Each structure stands twice: as structure tokens, then as C-alpha cells.
Length: 235
Image 1 (cartoon, rainbow, N blue to C red):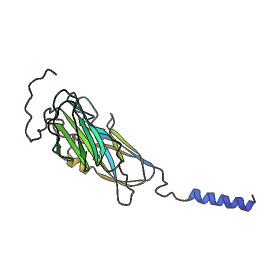
Image 2: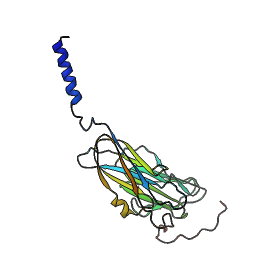
Image 3: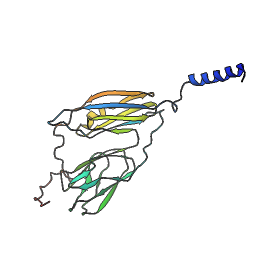
Image 4: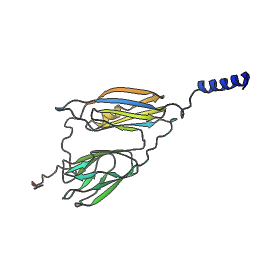
């Protein structure tokens, strides 16, 4: 190769190296945040979800179903307590207890009432709208669960330290939404923020949030009335 040819190749490589990256070529970004919550007695993790919604001009991040999704009823408990699903996902509610359950949700999110069904039976619900659904049993007031239906695949669930990390985020502009169990909805809405991500890690710091007074307290049954205490059972 002649000196002139070598110089030409070097010049082309230099131009490519210095050329600005397009949005698709920019390295992925990540965010991290921590929830500062009041310690009521013994510290424990609080169910929480953070998700990003692309702003206009930023490519969408569609949430593809990786089901099946299941909320098992066993030992008068929903397992898991918190589940994140894409809009349109069907969630199965199998009853593995030796007695009847009546799963319902009459609040924000998806409203449904599965009625009474016996041990070994399974019913399902399709979460066709975005939002947070609070789920209970109309027979056993101690049972509760939460299903968060999202359109975006860019989400993270809080760990045992009440911290959330979301990785592999394409560069662009996003709205950051949060949900924390026990925090009033009006406060959560005020925490929505807009951020620009450009291929690097962003630490959003600690978000201090108050838990609602009486968080975790009793809730009404599906008729909006107090639960009638059940007679003590041998199981």
C-alpha cells in the first residue's frame, strides 16, 4: 500500500472515530434512587415500583409479555404480594387453600370481582388498562396484593434496602413515575419528574416520602362495609 493510500485509510478511520453517535448508537444509560421512608418500629422493605415513560421524540419501550403471570392464594396470602405486568396480560388466581376465596379489586386500576371459588380452582383477570390495582379477598381481610400494569418495559422494583435501579435505558427524554405502598396517591403524583438520559448513570438520590397514617390498616370489603369476623377455624 502506498503512503497516499495509507493516509487515505487513516483519514477515513479518524472521521469515523470523531463522528457523533446517533441516538441508536449511544451507550445505554441507567438510573438509581433510594426511598427514604419513616421507620415505624423495625425497619423493613416497602413494596415500590419506579418506571420510565418515553417523552415525545424518544422511541417507545414496549413491554412484551413474558407470562404466564400468577398470584397464588396459599395460607391466606397472595404470592407474590407485588407483581408488575404489561397492559393486556392475564393473571391467574389459583386457590391452593382448603377453603373458599373471593378475590376482588374495587379501587384504582382494574375493577373486578371473581366471586366465591373453591380449593383447587383457578380464575383469571386481564389487566387491560395501565395503573395500580389493589387486590383483596372478601372473606379474609388479611389478604392483599398489588398488580401494576405498565406500557413501558423500563421499570424497577425496590430491593430490600428500598433502592431501585433501572439499567439499559436508551438515550432520550423520560417521565419518571413512582409507586410506593402506603404513600398517598396525591404525593406520588407530585413526585413525577422529567429527565434527559444520554448514555451515563444518573443517581436521583434519596426521595423522602411519608407513609399514610394507618398504612396497612384494615380496608372495607367489596361492598364498602367492615368485614364480619369469621369464627375461629381449626386451620
